[in-house]
Image (cartoon, rainbow, N blue to C red; front, side, top):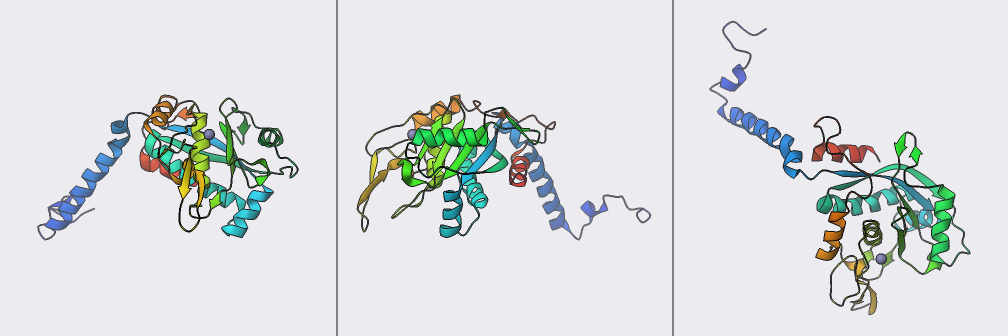
Length: 263
Ligand SMILES: [Zn+2]
């Protein structure tokens, strides 16, 4: 109940606050534009549900090098890779569950280790955990006996990623994850000198004071046009189009909120 003679919207017409009026109109206009962003984007969002497995070596290096739990480090690495997939392809990753995985320390063959984590977690794409369909398994380890940074199987929807920290490069685990996830979308390894692409395995020289080579994939998060085109055309390979879920509440902000709540 307002005072006699005043409209309920008198705030907007108060002559003493023209600036406030301008601010309110600006905010309303801004919110209106933001609410339309998803349909401007138009291409849809693919949400991929993840099972995340981490073994004892991963947990050890997580606390030793980063002072995080294995789960927290896994979450951070996935968030880093998510950023690139989200920006370039509107693909979002959502962690449905974490599982501890007890990797066999005597294994030296990368395929054997790969099979082990699939068997131990009982993962298959399409399985259900707590009512959520799981699309992809990301397995983290730091067991360096297999002599590989990572591995991917685009039929199973599984990637195996080793914790990777290199002198002169720093933390590059998310590069490995980005590389392996790209394989799930059909992107192929490249081998080309001077080609800055996260799919490129060509040796890249790390100079003073280290003097050694690392795969180019570990020093860039960029996808070259070949990789971009392949991932773009297969971006719906995993997960589901979630643009229309909830009758229009599928904007960027909403999904970021969902994504953060999923942690
Ligand atoms: Zn590769």
